[in-house]
Image (cartoon, rainbow, N blue to C red):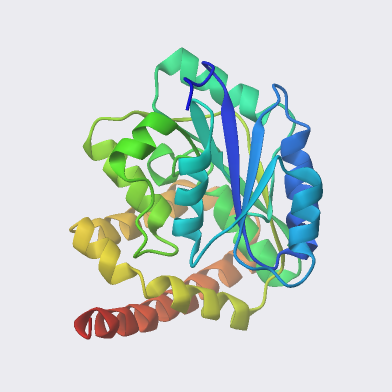
Length: 275
C-alpha cells in the first residue's frame, strides 16, 4: 500500500441489521468536508442494511463476529492516515471531521474524542440524554474516535474479547503509553430511538460479559470509571435539579444498568473459567 495522504481520513462503520439508522449515518459521512473514504463492515445483515451501505459507501466488507473485530477489519483495510469509527446509529454534524483534524493539528494529539448526545423519543431516552449532558466537558470519560492508523496498527486496535468496553480499553491503552487524546469542539448525535428498560438491560448484560476481560487488562479501572461518573453528576447537580423527573429516572436507569452489568460479568467470569 502506498503512503496515505497527510490528513486523509477513513471512516469505518460496523453494522448489523440497522436499517432504521444506517442511511442517516452514512449520508452524514458522505457530506463531510473534506471528503473521506467510507468503509462499512457489515456482519451479515438481513434487513436491507447491506443495500443501503452498497449505495453510499466506497467499500462494503462482510465480516464479524463482533464490533471489535469489524472495526479491526476496517482499520486494516483503510487507506488513510487517520481512522474514525462510528456506530451505525450515529450522525456527524457538518464539518465534524474537519474540526477533529484541526484539533489534532493544534494539539499534536494521537486521538481525538467526539462527544456524543443522545437523541430519540420517550421518557427513558430523555433520561439517557440528561445523563450524557453531564459528561460533555469531561475529557477523562470520552473515548477517542479519530486515531492515527499507524498507532492503531501498532497497538493492536480493538480487543476482540470485548464488546462494549473496547473503546474504554483503547483509551486506557493510549493514556498508559502517553498517546495524547483531546476533545474536538463538536457533538455527535447518537440516535437511540425509543429506549425501553428491557432493551437497556439486555444490552448491559451483553456488555457486562466483557467486563472480566476489561478488568484483567486494567486493574482498578472499573471502580475508577464509576467514581468518575459520580463526580460528573455532582459537578452537574444544578443541571440535574432543573429536571428532577428525568434526573430521578436517570438514577433508576443507572441502578438497573449496574444490575445488568453485574449479571453479565458473572456470566463472563464463568465463560472465561471454562475456556
